[in-house]
Structure formats: C-alpha cells, structure tokens
Amino acid sequence: MVLSAADKTNVKSIFSKIGSHADEYGAETLDRMFTAYPQTKTYFPHFDLHHGSAQIKAHGKKVVNALIEAVNHIDDISGALSKLSDLHAQKLRVDPVNFKLLGHCFLVVVAIHHPSVLTPEAHASLDKFLCAVGAVLTAKYR
Amino acid sequence: MVHWTAEEKQLIASVWSKVNVEECGAEALARLLIVYPWTQRFFDAFGNLSSPTAIIGNPKVRAHGKKVLTSFGEAVKNLENLKTTYSKLSELHCEKLHVDPENFRLLGDILIIVLAAHFTKDFTPACQATWQKLVGVVAHALAYKYR
Image (cartoon, rainbow over the protein chains, first blue to last red):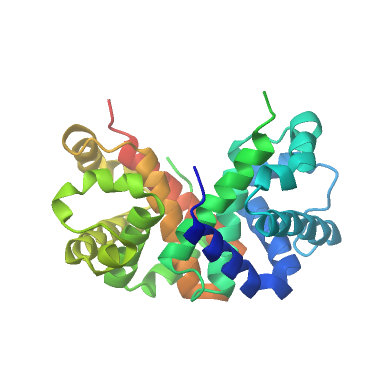
C-alpha cells in the first residue's frame, strides 16, 4: 500500500503532537503488547518484562525513535530503515505477524493519550504508516 | 470453553456498563469502513460511503453500528456460552452474508481503539488485554459455524 500526500501530512501532524512524550509512549506500547499478547514476550527472554522495567523503557524509546526516523524520511521509509531491516532479517527474525500487534498497541496508546488527534482519517493514515514500516522491516526476510 | 477469571469478568462488566452502545457502535463501524475501506464491500446498500465525512454522517452506518454493538452486548451477558449464543449469527454471516471472519478480527481491534479513546487512562493494559481476549473469542464464536 502507498501513502498518499494526505497520509504523510496526517502522520507528520500526529507525531508532532506526541513528540515530547514519544519515549513514554514507546514503553507503554511494549508494555501493552506484552500484556495483551504474551507470545510476544518470547522475543525477550533476556529482558526484565515487569511493568516499568528499565529495559522496557529503553527498548520502547528505541522503537519509537525508529518510527520517528521513518516519519522524518516518510518519502523513503525503506532507505531510512534499511539497516533495521537488515537486522530484523538476519538477526532478530521476528515473525511478521508481530509487527501488526505492535502497531495496534501503538494506535491504542495514541488513542489513550490524544483521543482528539486520532480522528478517523488520522487513524487510517497512521495504521497505513505502521503497516508500511512493518513491511519495510520484513522486506528482506526471504 | 473459554475460562474467565473474576478479574476479567469485572473488567468487562465495568467497561461495558459505561459504554454508550449507539455512539460507540456507530463510531466503531464508521472507523472500520474508513480505516479498512475494502470492508465497504458488504455495504453496497448503504448509499454514500464516498468519504470519511459521508461515512460518519451516514444514518445506515450509525444504525448498523448500533445493531452490531448491541449484539456484542449479548456476548458480555453470556461469557460462558459464546458459541451457542452466536450459533445462528455465525451461520447467517457465513451462508447469507458471506463475510470473511478476518473482518470480525478487524472490527474487534477497531472497537478496542474506540474504547481506548473513550476511556483513556482507565483503559489500563490489563483492561486492554481482557478486552482483546473478549473480541478474539467473539470473533472465533462468529466464525465457528462456517463451513
């Protein structure tokens, strides 16, 4: 799927509004994903996954910063995330289904903290963007 | 049979008691049709679905959204017995409506986002997890009689 000009505008606008809280939202996204979809914890046997763990906070920050990077290069997400794409294909090999779960939890977090920002159109654009990111990260899997 | 803990039942009941079924149902269905436009394929008879504004304002969308969420209320009342509760609806969706069960999963996730926006911080991770389980088992029950 292709991001329209309106999608790109919507996504940039959403991220500009959540900007300063991005790190927290990353941690909360992961926390919700681990709680709602316990199978996702299998990728983190080396982590302390209790609520509020320092590792979840750090990792959440990493995840959101990658999303921000993609937003900042929204015309070339695959270029911007190329190294991350290699990492996921060669080392991490997270099953593709999990990107949808993470994306969904991120949408939930945005809905909780900025319900008025997540209009139906913005929701559609953000969902598309998150799918596009997932597609880039799994593009080199086979 | 699905097992529900006392805590899960509490989380379901307390959220549901505060849901405005008409508003929430209308919003969930509208968002489904906007975010996943291919789902409009089932609603040729609904008239104007040409834009998000048209979809949100469409009275048939509102009415149908209310109907769908009212039916979801039956699940909340019959947590121990979902397959039986939805047996006829499952057959209907398969044999007459020809709806791919993936659509039930899509609508379930949209409902979660609508609830999150409505309840904000009260929609805790534990609450979300319980509701994800609920929408999952409802989707499963609705798909159960497919053949």
